[in-house]
Length: 186
Image 1 (cartoon, rainbow, N blue to C red):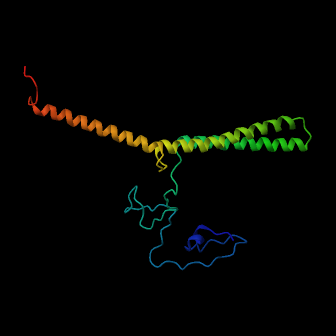
Image 2: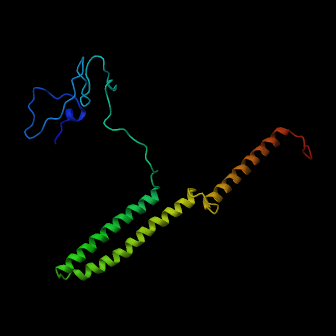
Image 3: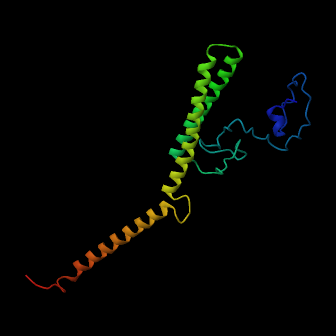
């Protein structure tokens, strides 16, 4: 059954317009009392609506939902795209090799060799995605494991910041003493 915009929304359709042939009429909602309901597809115009403001009866066509998973890191996404492309080309090569074999073409043997080589490269590409993801997780601290390299690096950075702050405080104290504690005076 085909449905027009007015029928999907349950709004009254134009009563004077004939229905399309072959389309059965769906039960229509009663007309709203009072002024006509605003059409959500057409922006309201008039003296009371300003540019950039939405009319009061406005309902967006869709609502954005937050992503369920975070975006992949750039190196991992690059490796994944590369792997998908290589796998796709390998599948195409295998299909062409199969069809050439069925047709008893001279291209069958080179295509089989190409698809075998493509399988090796595709395997490397998929492993590259896995290794790149593991390396990124280790370097950026996503994996919370005691042996994580990222945890040791954070510990070293914190230690260096503490030492820098302690040295800065020590220099500040020496400057405030103003001569006391010195072994000799000029």
